Amino acid sequence: MTARGSLTHHSSDLHHRAEELAAHLPPLLVAAERVAATVSQGVHGRRRVGQGETFWQFRRYQFGDSTQLIDWRQSAKSQPVYVRETEWEAAQSVWLWRDGSPSMSYRSSDRLRSKIERADMLLLALASLLIRGGEHVAILGTGMPPATGRGMLIRLWSMIEAQDQKAKTSYESLPAFESLPRYARVVLIGDFLSPLDEIREAIGIFANQGVRGHLLQVLDPAEETLPFSGRVRFDGMEDEGDVLIGRVESMRDDYLQAFNRHNQGLEALAKSFGWSYAIHHTDHSPETSLLALYLVLSEKTGD
Image 1: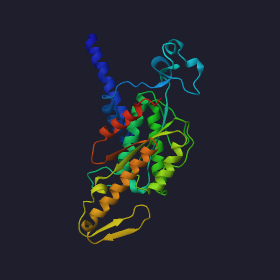
Image 2: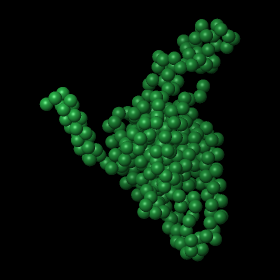
Image 3: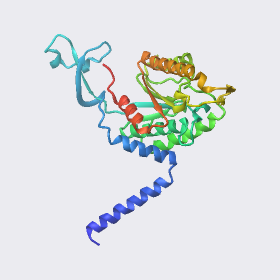
Image 4: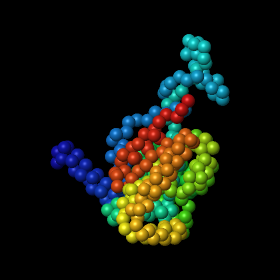
């Protein structure tokens, strides 16, 4: 056998082994990895301020900075005192959370993924992207320490599965308080249809710790358009009870106005804490929202 033939045979063996490995992985995880791989093709290397040795930029000295960071040569050129900032080469932790409450099980059509299915996909695909970039990740509410490595994705998936089982008897639509390191980052994924006061209280606790956050609202398209007509019974998914509407179209305008006010309030609330906010619809592909969220997370922290 020629060397070329041997190489081809070896590549074929690796391909078959990869297929066998993928066959034993949970379908959700396989799909999330596929989405992450697609998005990663459009992502370049990341650079952030931190404890690395590669020079990043100069900035003015601030109270609390170590005097060892002062660059005396640069400071001698002008009046202000400057410090050297370097690339952040140590991994920075990101805590992930997604709403597992019953309302997330909604889908308006059998052709669409439910909100919880899409949220799980986005969380795992984002975790895959972060791990590819050397980040440490963890899931809020599990008590697990942040970790990295490809095996971490299996752990994340198993924890999500466990949370899904718990959600069948729980109606918590917002994350519970958890003490996090200052300047940590959190990504919260859910429909965020709770009252704005409750959302403000939940994320305010994190923001007051100095935590930077990102809200990704996952919605079924019908929730924003109310496309139904005629006599419709709406079933409450979280013990709200059922409502029978005789002519849905007669209340569509009022519903849409109320829904838009809620979402505008949610966006304003996020901005008031310095957090980012975006909407993802389950009838759209996950790649666009995932790339946008990953790029937000990749931004260099402010001086």
